[in-house]
Image (spheres, rainbow, N blue to C red):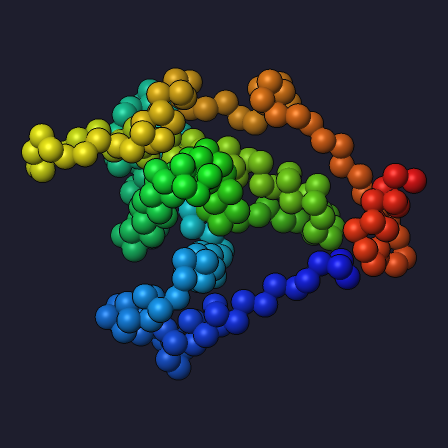
Length: 238
């Protein structure tokens, strides 16, 4: 839209140019020097840059999730399903390391929900955008909001399922570190406590109508884009 400014992340480009040399990523020690010089927004943008360029263009992938869900169901949803079955579903040890770090990051963000206003459920569902590749076929046509929602909703549900499985496998305390080991953060503990149904039900109009309000989607086909938000709203009203 003409009135929506394009995003130009020069900091991200600068950071990527620093950590790469002739197409190869630099050593961890060198990267660490640059990491401390950039804010958290640039670093998150860098992570998203890498996530969507992994094999399969995603962190996890639908084949991995389908295989994991089947193994979990066959074994009656054991507590340590994520630790026992997920490595078997991933392509390599490097892939497993990326997936575990991915969920560690989500748990960290969810554990600080009071300051960042991002609950565990909200955070993991947003991350579904990078966890799973979009299912695109030639007959789907051009990208649109409706198609984006159609692809994102199942990805969000799958991510929420995996997050709960990951949290179930985390011990509330570590025997190796003694009795003073801290328990899971309150937001994480409450997330497990408030979700007794496992696996969680899929998002439908039936099970979300109590907490969410449906909003109509209006699609406009025009020859010339609206120049201002007011003009866009006027067109919608007509």
